[in-house]
Length: 398
Image (cartoon, rainbow, N blue to C red):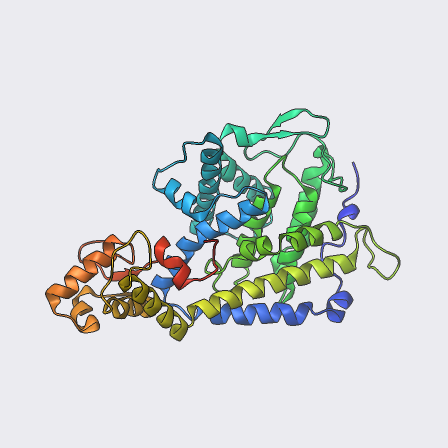
């Protein structure tokens, strides 16, 4: 057994934090995320969160080298799987990731549970429960094929690049130290944000599972940020930023593995300065994603993009869908602004006769631009695939 001192420091010291940009960055993230949260109505936020589950799944799996386009993920959600068994397995992997997100979003997570061994085991179990057998196998450095057991820590010692994680028999010991270090009842203010980012690295450093550590770690960080009240979480996607700077992300992770570089580099076994740099990178990446979604959800900008979409539909420039009356933009703008609106208002909003407005609404529903929960429910804004590149440009690959 080795000492958990090998994983210290769990957080940068107060003096290291004060000398860094971390306090200002963390405060900036909190403020901008809160502003984003207040920009959209609850119904619109719910639509965005459902849409972003697919995006988060795509980017988190992409970081691990598994590229399943959001289009293929949505097909799988409708039961339309690729005939190629390899691609089909990757679709199922993406669905498993989405399922975990949806389950976690329904839970009222306590601070205590968030940092426990059980939390990590539950996330891993949920993720691997529906993973195809082919994706549950890993090959060890010795060439031995090992099976990943859902919700179970590894029972083999491993090496990840140059990093040698704790021995399998010591994993619970290190998780206990993890739980103690990040107790949220001990942390205040911006230190909670810094703790969330520090915890992301230290979990990956422990590498408690044979496989899935990166995805479990990112799902847990999502949960951590939501638990500390980072506004709008679910509307924006940290994994998108990490995937778009994948080389920098993996380099920052690796640098934070490095041992302490002399007496001025903290008092733990690992480099404090590199942990600070890792946290700065993570928070800057989060801010970038919050700013992206803030720009996308700006009312005037969204109205302009909705009109561009409807205009291109009228010109026949979007494949797979028919033309669309220009009055459709008024209905779509109202739905975005309010999240949903009564169907009794369709004639007034569109400026059309009631009969014509009903036909237009029927077309918008059939094409996924408006949704409903019943024939009498309000009409809700939605993001079908053919509109995504207009509504949320560059969110996902074309």
